[in-house]
Amino acid sequence: MDCVIAGSFRKFYEQIRDDVIPIFERAGIRVLYPPTSIITNPGDDYVIFKSDNRIERDPYKSKILSVRKDDVIKAAIEAKKPIEEIERLIALEQGFLEAGTNADFIYIFNPEGYIGRHTTFEVEYFLSNGKSVFALEELDMANQELDPLRSCFIMGRVRDSGGIYTPEQLVEYLIDQGQLKVPV
Image (cartoon, rainbow, N blue to C red; front, side):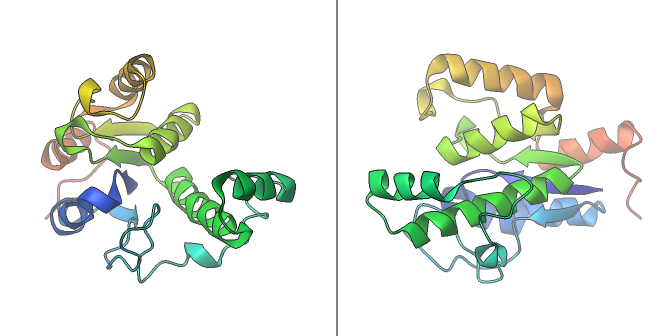
């Protein structure tokens, strides 16, 4: 069984790497993303890991999230950033979405109910593509960068799709559902 862990890697990566990934791996769940690595770009909007190969992707040749050059140019102008930087961000996002598309489920690591703009986009993408999505905690509506209506819809869909579980509870749930064998 494979999973992808979503959440604010900028805020919570050490907890994900040191606590969540080992729980899943001991249970026989392969974590497709994030890697067990170190962050190489502190302070940037998107996290890049030392072992990250997403950066070398061609942003215009994705089956997951197609983009056109003129849209990238427009985004670069509006963001006042170089085109290459926008292309790099698109490649990073495409790599994450591809990993999630290949996973059996998505786990949102959201201490105190926090998810940011990027995680929200990713969760909406996975939910709209029929993925089972589980979360650590209910969304804290006061702790969001989202409008309350959008937060309510996302949380309702997460509850319907998967549910709210700690990593240990999720492993037990998957065992109880017969989706995961008891680790020996």
